[in-house]
Image (tube, rainbow, N blue to C red; front, side, top):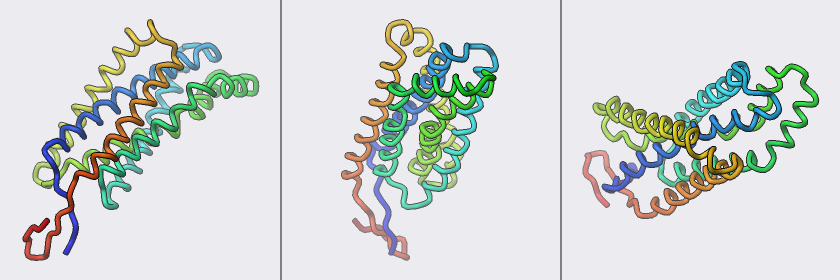
Length: 218
């Protein structure tokens, strides 16, 4: 006999909502990275090359780690913990980024490598954790292998839409009205709150017991 969990009607929409919000936050944070690095390293094309490289590399590791983690008794609780951890690890950027960049700026003469090192120090770990969200979302959403491709496509549509809105809203509005550190703090708080909600909602998901004959029992 093996244990599985029911999927309440709210679970899939909730996962899509969280995936949307994570996409929004990822691109918002990436754009803010440019504003954070600019006073020390400028805003030329190689600075943005450093930012994009760090984010793409860390996301790729996150996808790998999230896929691996999702094979081990995936649950909303663990999903929520990813969000909470992402919120916690991004928060220091709001408080310590200036000090970290000052040290790197004074010790690395070439702004190309200085910006690459600074961006890695600030964003590599948080973005790895954020990258874990997409594959873990797929694992929670897919219940039928025949529709797994459609489900994954829908998820990436939702998360990429969130990224697009995060890009436009952060660059057009947030940076005009709020300090960068305040925006980072809000993103951190939103991720943590969403994670806590997932952890709490996990308690309402009842386990099912499925025996070898395929008969489902609560």
